[in-house]
Amino acid sequence: MHYISTRGQTEAMGFKQAVMTGLAPDGGLLIPETIPSVSTQKLKAWESKSFIELAKEILSLYIDDIPPVQLKQLVDEAYAAFDIPEVIAMTSVEELQVLELFHGPTLAFKDIALQFLGRLFQHILEVEKGHLNILAATSGDTGSAAIAGVSGLSNIDIFVMYPKGKISNLQELQMTAAPAENVHCLAVQGSFDDCQNIMKSLFGDIGFKERYHLGAVNSVNWARILAQIVYYAFASLKFNGSNPPSFVIPTGNFGNIFAGIIAKKMGFPIDKLILATNENDILARFFNSGRYSRGQVHYTLSPAMDIQVASNFERFLYYAMGSDSERLCRFMENFAKEGTATMDSYETGTILATSITNNETRTAMRAVYKNNGYVADPHTAVGLSAAGRFSVIGQKICLSTAHPAKFPETVDSVLGENLVSHERLNKLKGLESRSITVNADQDLIAKYIVDNCRA
Ligand SMILES: *Cc1c(COP(=O)(O)O)cnc(C)c1O
Image 1 (tube, rainbow, N blue to C red):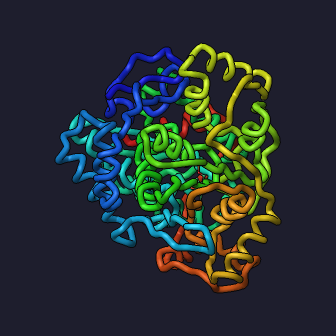
Image 2: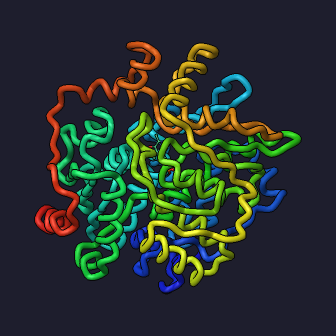
């Protein structure tokens, strides 16, 4: 399988190189040259597979430059780190199925991809005897999940930028409490979008990127999307009744939902994908109007989705534009220049989109708690609230993206004190925290990397 760039100016490369490259040198995102389609027979045969077995099947369709035995071992090791052997869990809440993706080491869905990606990096570096400097921007959960995937490794340094004061205390502590020597946390005075911009522009400086072997763990990295396809596939096969199921996805950077789009393209039985944003509604506005236009960032109860410019949206646009890189480049250029761009003649088709306010988030949290005794984290609640707005014919499956104990301030104030906790989070309290505060300045951050990376 070869990987190409959405912008069409990068030579095709194999999977391992795509993983190490992160963002394509032409500024685009890497995607597989073709999307493998799965036959009806195979779908039938896969219905009874466990999550881990299905992961091995799906990953091997996209990865042909790692020997199968080793690939399977990487998958086994990644998911052995989870709290439950099934990796993911399902709960019914009234007529909805809630798919809990947060049973990994840092209690957010990001672990599903990042436990695998961390091991993948390690495997590739061992073979190539290299050193990697991971540069990440986080809206709260990617940072800790990426750190959990690579902490303590001698051939990787990880630099994580997060918006200072804009993530929850526990999210911050999960990164900064007693970090290993290879972990470098930067509290940036700005928004997540500022962090993501700095990351993208340092990746765009090809000289710098190559000299310092920059690697990406954000969902610009194709391996993130790939690993996330598995839970859509798994749940779609489980709930494929007389009609295929639909998914509801709380969305920030469009990474989670994009994996669902690929699962559907592969042939898994999926009807609609319901996109739920918080008050940062740029994506909801696009899907309802065709106009993509940047707004002011709002700080909400679901901080991991306080994002204006979603990097994976470019992958979606590429396919929506009939794989026409030139047309995509014009759209992205327009957007970069004007802060707005329009896509004519677009059929939304499988994606239904809406945005949810803070008040609606609280209402959804209270309703599922009162009626079902279920404590949803505020990101999941955005999805639960959106689920009520659309009727679909098959089973509706809401993705639950974080453990509620990660957001005690919100859960306590909305539902009452001491309803949720998690042992791993309790242990963080009181540990010494290490991070540095920096301005949202690309040159300063580049210098920090140069001064602190170990190779
Ligand atoms: C990252 C995150 C999201 C948004 O996922 P995207 O892939 O950015 O759309 C939603 N909920 C939680 C808890 C997250 O950490």
